[in-house]
Length: 144
Image (cartoon, rainbow, N blue to C red):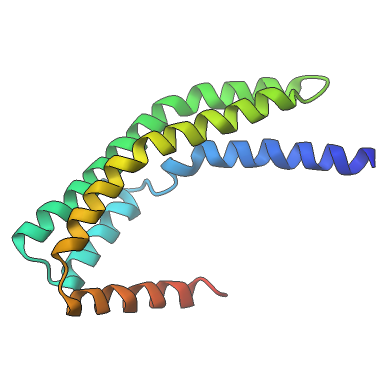
């Protein structure tokens, strides 16, 4: 039973580290893979200028969130290191870190969702069909 508890604690630390890196996962050259995907989607959906403005406003907000997350990342890594080096894992602190991360994501969500809703309202039925096909394509690629 002791090993299961230790294993669960280790899993929590690993998940905390990974969640700290979550928002920075799409970085790469210039705008990164995430920015490139926005460009490809805009091209494939044949967006109007007004739609592009709304679409890229979402991209820009997500980009800003990733930038802020990168700044916080250093502090999170230092905290994770101190938690790992301790004689016993401070479960309350791990939970606190998860709650803080979740709080940051939840505080950013309404603005992103509002922009996404405004963009969605401009899509034609044909564009929505294209979005469904793109989602199906990406889902089928990830099954492997």
